[in-house]
Image 1 (cartoon, rainbow, N blue to C red):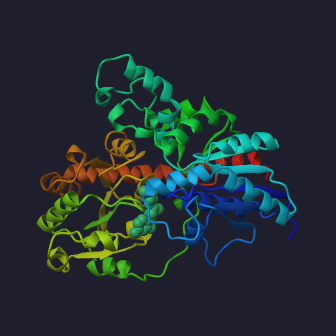
Image 2 (cartoon, rainbow, N blue to C red):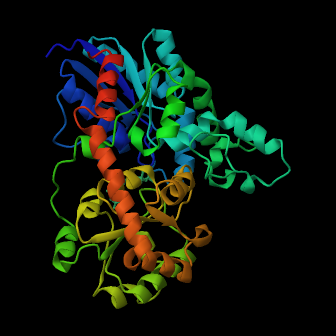
Image 3 (cartoon, rainbow, N blue to C red):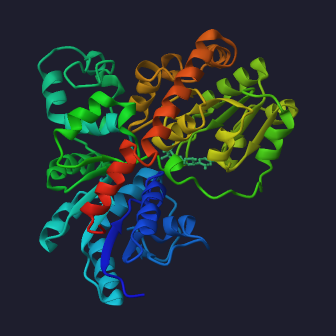
Length: 447
Ligand code: UDP
């Protein structure tokens, strides 16, 4: 097929960034069959994302991830991020040129992870629109947009960073500086990611549109404020409701295990996303709480972490608990047996929980997770933050009992159902997210 338009899609291959970008690209590709989407991402990340159901007009292309060639990379997540950022943008420039040469079509638009701030310069040089995709919530984007004011506000008081309320940011009145993504504060030893995010803030004004996998109605005040700051501030999600994933086979037996329980809202699902493993003492506290409460639980836990659980825990709980190394999370949350989600507060996990009306217990670790968790508890009222921000036996028991057995927990379940209704309305044909999606098609030149 002769394509009329070529969109360069640049992904950030860490955490759960590339998957929601690809979900968006799939929706765009379905609506714009005469546009070619070159999805440029690390080989390792592409290998996990692309399968037999690839679209004809989406081409996966690999970029060098910056790790030393020819030997397996054994460093940490943050070291991998640092190496990748060092290799950028040269690695992306090269991949774009190859994509243009092979297709015979110059790139007409760059749709990129917002972290990849240099795409703004690349787009400017080429005279094409730059459309950054913010893979997290509007609250965290807002906190970055207000970086300068936050830093000034902290400097203007002698108060510890921890205590400063963000009453001057529309929609973030219940948030304090202790909840903020640490990358906001550059300091002397700023990490490559912090530098990247601060550069992103500088470059965002160059964007033609900023796109989010969220919906306006979740944070109407923040939405109104950010709409006044960007020419096109487009919430087009949640993708999980706009274009639900295909049914999966139940290879791990999780769904049949849930079905076998046959008790609505009775199971605690536990997962900390793709990057985090809680420290050993907190894993022990969580285990003790699970053994004490004896709610059935389903835990997505990496093999190496199972080894550091308390002696005998697996045997003692196998009559009411199931552990797997990887779970079909959206389908699990959608199962009627699941009554609570113990999470690190990653944005994709929160959206999936909202889509399935499951209240959350949050133990955030890094990045936007604290801020998301604060919003879960104090803005949306759809869950709780663990006491003191870490798992202790007593604090975790309290959270589990509150969500699973009390009126307060029932209220959170009701709140999350109301939020789901708003999300469903947003992706309806006349809803805000659908209208924003149409606008996005226009911005990228596909309409
Ligand atoms: N996930 C999954 N199975 C698992 C663990 C995680 O499918 O066993 C998926 C989950 O559905 C979500 C993503 O991994 O889409 C985690 O994204 P999130 O933004 O919550 O956290 P991150 O991985 O970026 O820390």
